[in-house]
Image (cartoon, rainbow, N blue to C red; front, side, top):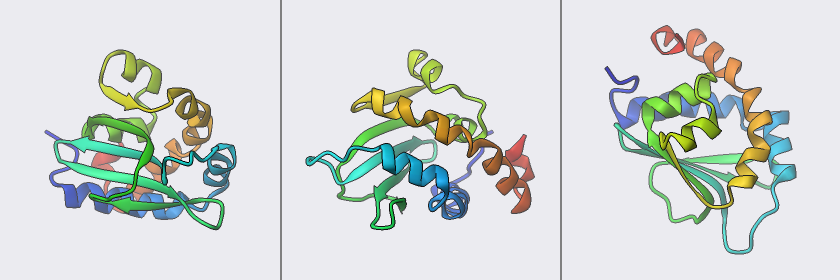
Length: 143
């Protein structure tokens, strides 16, 4: 059975979590290392399937990220496309980005070297995601 029963369910979980971490030191470190392209107005877009959903990170004027949920006209520099279950497992720290790309569990578009540079900062969020799920009554997703 899928972890998320609908796009609304996925958005509720990810929105709550990203609201907690989007202004964190890790987020600011990601944005500090990001060299903005003149051709793109968003850092990354996660495209999820089963359920269909999109989560897009855009730089803000505070040196961290804002998050757009759903369709948007912004042009991301990086996109990662995957089954929502793989995305959920990634945020739990159970899916290695490099292996998921090699196994084609994730498809990436854009300069992959940029995404690999931020993985150490993202890894610091993995236990926070699990804790967030437990704290918000979604223990069934934390396992």
